[in-house]
Image (tube, rainbow, N blue to C red):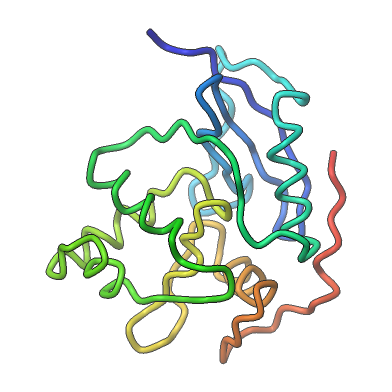
Length: 176
């Protein structure tokens, strides 16, 4: 039985975000201007109120008032992807790990590329913090929301990145 999907948009310091969810929970936080933008499906219902708690928590995160999200998810992916996404949630605010470390944490130390691919397919950007995964050499690597947004998110969390040009004043958000 398929649940009715709902969606809304939110303005943020990293651009406009598309929020998607079902009665089970949040299914997506997508960058409208990211590498692979997603548009609402024709059968999705626009529903601003459904996402009140998600918007409240994201706004608090962007304003440096929240370091840990408490939301239900409707994760849809392979068992391997879901395992990677669940492990991503254990990376603390303000910390980064490498793809190799992420692979070790799920007891698949040789699956670095597969872990990277699953990380790149994370449907719930920011909240499931795939931006906290970096290269083994400490350098920032690709990000579906764009490298500038990865830098902004890491700078917001106090991570000192050698290439970061994000300004702390960017973290005031307007919610629509």
